[in-house]
Length: 265
Image 1: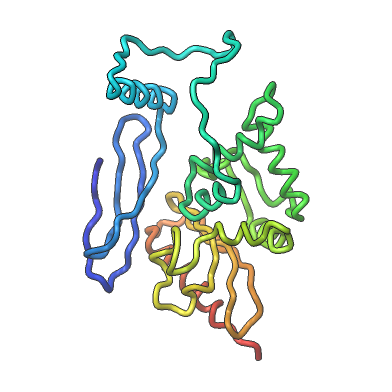
Image 2 (image 1 turned 180 degrees about the horizontal axis):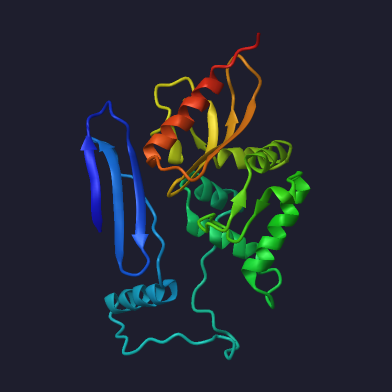
């Protein structure tokens, strides 16, 4: 772990960024945390998930006194009953909440594949993307406004316009599942990836949104409930910027704070 974080005073901004080198087992942590702040769980991608699972499983067995002489990865199709264990999934609303509130890319990729496994003979990612496009079309999203290649959005081959994101938000606002969907979004200054943003501003507690971050890219989209104006849908995307993530977020936050102060003339 390469720790580049610093401790700052209680009145300074707080943010943490996690990255990793996929060619070697190194995790980079950067950002700044206020003195005395609470711990915050974060996630990083596992380069070899199958090998990682096997090694973790082997260690668990050996801690129980079961000696493991050899491990290997084989196809299970030759066995009639290969199941060794089963984990009951939480309801979908809970999975989506973890995906959006914590910006959990692993959950996002898994949910895409769940959409795709309805046709087990085909590639789960491709069929999942096809299913997602069908759902987005039903919501009223223009298929010309986006191009998706994965579930997490980490690939730079993904393309989406701000208009397409607002169409998603409007479509979900008119959906029977809207309450579950909105509850999965971070609340400004209170929960999830927005917990440390918008604190002590007019946007705190009235903005429900999802963040998006890559190098040179910062995004925020969601709902605003101004006390003296009608509810708003917004989508802000910044591309190809040489500014730091902190500077991009500060600019986006200023726009959102202004929107939260709108009043009927």
